[in-house]
Length: 297
Image: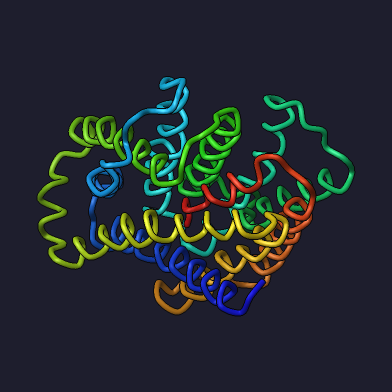
């Protein structure tokens, strides 16, 4: 990999990590309801990528379902989780998406799991359990369970997307935005009274956060990352994106004052080492998963 492209990848990971911190601040500190935040975000994505919406790839129903899984479902759960979960813990739990994708690829695509990928899955799951553990036993944090659900939703969408062909990156972003904004607006209207007022109270910083999340993270960041995936082997790119959770942890400790102790350190090391083992094995859907990881990205 050239030094320039490596620098681009570092910048992409930093943008993704920064977005995790910003999302936490928006929903937990500024009080903007998570579904409303996701709806505004995808509304902007849909508006910017509208020229790439048509012609729609076939079958449309699968494209819409994948878009909902990787868009509205994934981000709704993610932002809801951020209300109580710290970015540092969330950045580790979201790594469950890698073993989830591997297991789903076996069930749906007929892939085979050999012992090294099985070891990676076991290590990642063990790391997640350690992160969720407390002196009183397994900590059933609602926020972290929502983050885990977001990881599963995104993984299912990534595996299903593997069964589609001819979908360009910006075209997929267009369908994610268009398909996601409507159900999110409806759900927010039904369950989040006063969402518009909370967003207005947050003011221009909220507008800046939405623009950064929608345009810089999704449109620019994902398009640049997809270009790297096309240029280099996924087995080279995927492990390097583990910089994202490490950067998230660092930024979380510095900005949102996340608690990070020895237990978190051990859990993080186990989870990321497991992800590294899985990412280094050949996997049909790994490029899609790593592209999808805007999620906590």
